[in-house]
Length: 377
Image 1 (cartoon, rainbow, N blue to C red):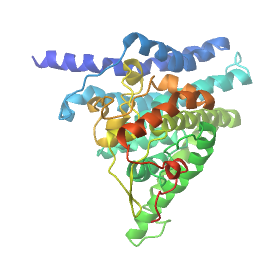
Image 2 (cartoon, helix red, strand yellow):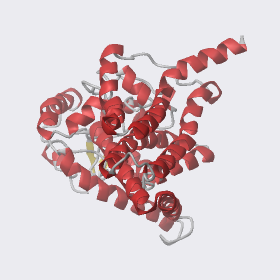
Image 3 (tube, helix red, strand yellow):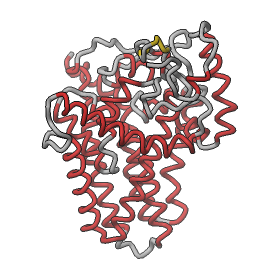
Image 4 (cartoon, helix red, strand yellow):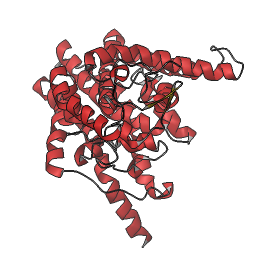
């Protein structure tokens, strides 16, 4: 009986382990070179877009009270990814800088693909790990973020984004009519500034200066420095450059997803600088099955902001009565986000419909569009 239950739990978790197939794909691409280097971006962006159409939507919900003991195969998934990504990233740096069959363009193309993996999968898994109470899991999340030089994402996400999502104080919430190419530089600067400011404010409340040893930014900088040093040791200056290529691509992938997740959605201003509580309606939901396998239910983002402490297999799907719905999964939507006219054509009517559905009493959306408080504080 126990063995049957264990097998059943492992089987139900199996589709979420699809991401591990990207690891041998990366090595195969590196060994083959040439056009094979397109395999990784094609797999994550287009293959899963096709699979979404074939597999349809997953509208079922797990019991949110399921104990962690019954989720061990899901928990192991995110934990196991950390050493696998580490070995792959630095193993490929060592290999690519010595592979005579790869020229400079091919090496860059290879690490573009690696960045798609470390951004699409690695940062996503770090997001799951950083939300856990277990210190070991949070440390694993820090390691994943250090591999892409974006360690401050943990502070920004936990202390700023979840608290201020859908308000002008959240740099990660994309405003209505704000194209991705304007959003991207704004969020790169804004998220770093807000993350450091949040940690500094926490220390100040304890009577400590920003440079106190307990500021996690010291840990962030140390881990990132170690990753840079390791890349330099294994691959020289070329290896360091390739490491920076994958980190840049990974960050771009993350912020593309951030752009999609909250585009145009705002919490109602209640006056005196206060906003309504975060509800499922303040994040876009996508129930597409295959891309949720790849992204461990990240597309159930409406529930994640509503209940941030839920592990990914317990995130609930919210229908159109409770949350706005994306027409496609993230693989398609992130590509659309790179083409602002197409994005606005697809999403702006949906934002306006969302406003009519949830906030028919709001007549003037201009202050929300410009990212300002509708009323003075």
